[in-house]
Length: 431
Image 1 (cartoon, rainbow, N blue to C red):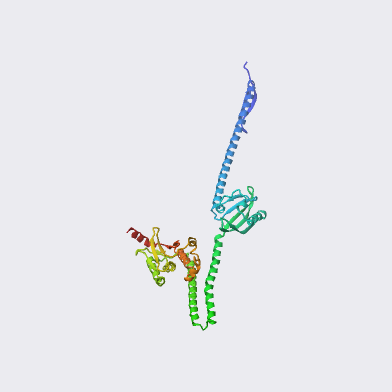
Image 2: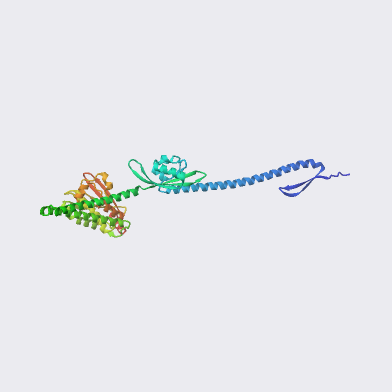
């Protein structure tokens, strides 16, 4: 009789939650089946764990990638902000509640001479008004504007406007504020120069007016019947009247030139002709001083771009000064040069006493004189070189001054060559 076995164990075969089928085990294999089922369970559990870990790893990689992208984005954004702040010409400081500086742009480093990051604000900006304003802003919020004067670099004064604004508190830096510094030195200097100009004009006009009024009163009184005194006083009054006329004329001329300084002239001007005209207009003055004006110029000077009347005024002023201060019996040399950079330079050389080096940078200032008494005695208004400077500014030219005490001075004017003359100038140089 054959052995008959009956299924004593049946186990479902499933993957995750899906039943794939059933597995039956005979009685002799039940023990084996139990062990097999256990192994299969472990394998399926391991498979599930592996799948979960793979999913978690993929998720972590995705998060890590997102974080990396965000980090790169924030880094680039921070770099952009830093570049923008460094491009701001005014000094900008950012500091925390404890006054520790956490950012300073390039202008701050240029102002202070060092990088103040992590230093105390009060150590960097040593001014009681700024410190008090900092405390007010950090404590109460809002913005405060104050004008602060600094003395830095020895005797050089800087006038600065400090603006303080509180920032919204953030989790990273907490309460903070921004300090922006505006340099008002140039504006203050301009205001001072304007005030000095008004004072100088008043003084220059008051002196001859006082002289004229005083002599008129004398002629109406004690010298009324004195012909000798009358002739003497009338001569002085005439001189003072001409002096005021020259002063007012120079002031009006300077005002007109400055008003049109932005408009570049477009005329074509013959330099040689201008130089000859200026020398001819000064013949009477040069003969009186026994001075010779020598124009050492070739006939082939290129044309320049400019306004003929103003260029004539430039060389007339320079030659007139050379004749006045060159001394009797001296020679005023006028020497043109054709530059390779598309310009013409004309030097006016005198044989005068020369100018001390410390005065040269200020010679083109209005009413500035090296020797005030001598200048007034010679009829100078103190505006001649200022007029020359502003005319050359309008012509996009330049003026350079060289001088040696006891030897003489050289004033060199540079003007742009007209385009149609550049080719001709090159031909002359080649010949």
